[in-house]
Amino acid sequence: MAAPMEYTAEQLNYYRICYIVTDVLAEGLRTIFKQEWDNRYKVTLGEWKDEPKNGMDFESHESPRNRSRNARLLKTMINGDGAEWDCTMLFYAIRYSDCLCSLHPAVQSNVDDLRTFRNEDFAHIPRGHLSGGYFQEAVLKHISVSKGMLPDDACSMLRLLSGVTDDEVEKEIAQTLDYQPLALASAAIYHQGDLKQAKDYHERALDVRLKKLEPEHVDVPSSYNNLGTVHEQLGDLKQAKDCHERALDVRLKKLGPEHVDVPISYNNLGVVHKQLGNLKQAKDCHELALDIWKKKLGPEHVDVATSYNNLGDVHRQLGDLKHAKDCHERALDVRLKKLGPEHVDVATSYNNLGLVHKQLGDLKQVKDCQELALDVRLKIFGPKHVDVAISYNNLCVVHSQLGNLKQAKDCHERALDVSLKKLEPEHVDVARSYNNLGVVYWKLGDLKEEKDCHKRALDVRLKKLGPEHVDVAISYNNLGTFHEQLGNLKQALDCLERALDIWLKSSELSMFISQSLTITWALSTSSWVT
Image 1 (cartoon, rainbow, N blue to C red):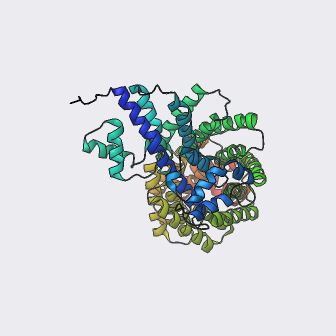
Image 2: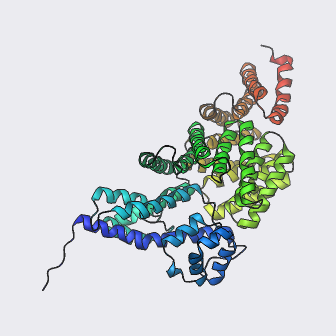
Image 3: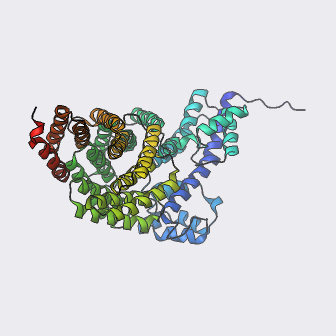
């Protein structure tokens, strides 16, 4: 009787990686493809079910060039048998088709990494042997791309790939990962709001690319882009600006000024400039992005809607409410047509249109828009996501203006609670929640809580935004109002003068005009003489 065959650790590692590349990778990519298709076309063309109609709909959205170059793959797709799909088919459908040409940056980066691993790294592994160190690196980056595995499947895969045999340990690790495979862990944790882990992942990804490639290689900007996006979400605006500027510089040099990746950098840089208060630079960036995307993608593409949305937000902050409303209505129209009524970008458009109506004084429209945004976000994210906190915050402002102070206080406390759990304690969104909660406490007459909230908001804004940002002026103004109520005229005058000085330097003229009238009255009243 033959003795049982024994395998070395290196051989077992090799077979495990083979399993990843041949089975898990393809199945995971299919999950990504279906998610991306359904996000875009479920409402208009129907859910992807591997039916011939799905394949024909896909083909009809491809350019003549893509139809010619990928005729064999498209024929397979129209056959309607998902079992015939290989990784070549999936990489084409996800990364290079016209149908799914605009992926979330984190998803795009990870799919590209997986393609590189399959086509380059895996192809050069000595057959039958893989060292423990290389195996761990490969597992960290490329276990799978399937999202939302069932708990039993996640534990089984963990057992197969890592050798863990303790059931409790398996469950703990799987739950920690929320049953998400590590290859797309960065995208998963980004959407779940776990931004610190996303930052760590993208820093490692950038480091790997810089070591393997030239600093100006065309693949490097996507890592800078992803890291910049996470920095922006964390409130690290200086680092975010630096990352997006590096990405833009490489793309302009290597791809030219009208390549479809260039407006991605213009757009992201514009978002950061807006948060830094550099509204002219933000407007220039978003107008450049909009111009390129309209030329390359047509007027009803989702990326064009993104540009309209972001440009509208800048117009609003500049006080140009007519153009702001027009931009947000265009963005909402495209998104409803292309994405359906329950997409996260539709919620963003409702939210931003509500902000414009607020400045126009249309409180009923504001409440309607913010309730629609909150409803969509709760369905997509659940109650503990940072975008849900934003909706609570904006809805609270409406309740406050309508005099519904109890509802306003409840909303702001929910928004603050989510922001503190999901973001840094010194994040600008946390400061916004403190600021707005302070305004409600002022209306309720709770001066102790009011002062504490405005002081916390000011401290964060000074650290994160610098002493000349308009949000800092708002905090000084609110603290000045508080001191005036207590009769602390010297402190009130100091705060209001600081606020006025910032607004005079700012381009947010509408905000300056409305606030400076109050300040001017205060400065001209005889009781202010000290």
